[in-house]
Amino acid sequence: MWTGFSRSCPAAHTQKQRKATYFGRTTLSDVKSILITGATGGLGHAVAARLARDYRCIALYRSESSWNELRKSVAIDGVANVEEINEPLYGLVLLAGAFAKGSAVDVFETMMEANLMSAVRAIEPLRARIEDGGRIVAISSAASKTHPRGLGAYVASKSALNAYIEALARDLEPRKITVNALLPTALDTPAMRDSMPSDRLVPLDRVSDAIASLLSDASASISGQMFVLSR
Image 1 (cartoon, rainbow, N blue to C red):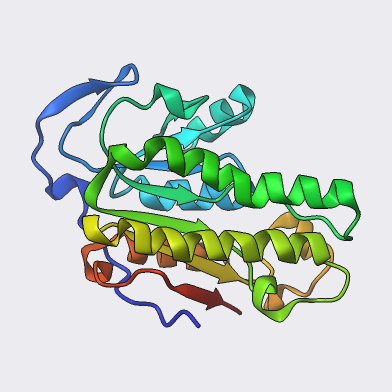
Image 2: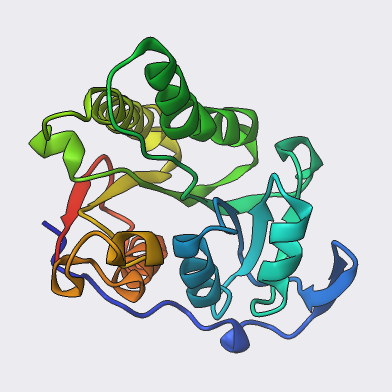
């Protein structure tokens, strides 16, 4: 279970103030860059807002309108596909995913695509661009450990993501790139508030702080781990 390592990261304003042009706007060239998948979702808004305080954040988006909505509240750049990334990245934060009940073949295909392949398609083309000593943090699910009834496809897809993250941690160990996953129970989103009491939901700022901690220098020796986040 997540015990909350350091919740602080080096603040962007403490970096050198040399400026450069990046995706059409002026930014601090010495601030580390983070690519975030799923940044336009409910959790993504909270995570992007938290990480933008310390990093130059780039959203990998599918919907331009959703990205434009995110930009109204968060200072963030965006790309529609990973091929647009042409500079080193300090880290990847993988929030993209989906949920569905059942175990029909089409549900399996949808869940594997959303919860496993979305991560693979973000990470694999960018392996060489991740800086030595960088970070990868993925969002999985506590259901991958508890295996609830009726969620066969979802559980299988998140379990596959866990296995991929653990294997990737070993692959990237020589480069001192850490790879970890957070496994929250139900998140405090509008959809979940309609079906569960709020005191059973994990606050989004807790998830955001946990991600920030795993990105920090204090977590340089933590890799290949699955941290359960519960209320």
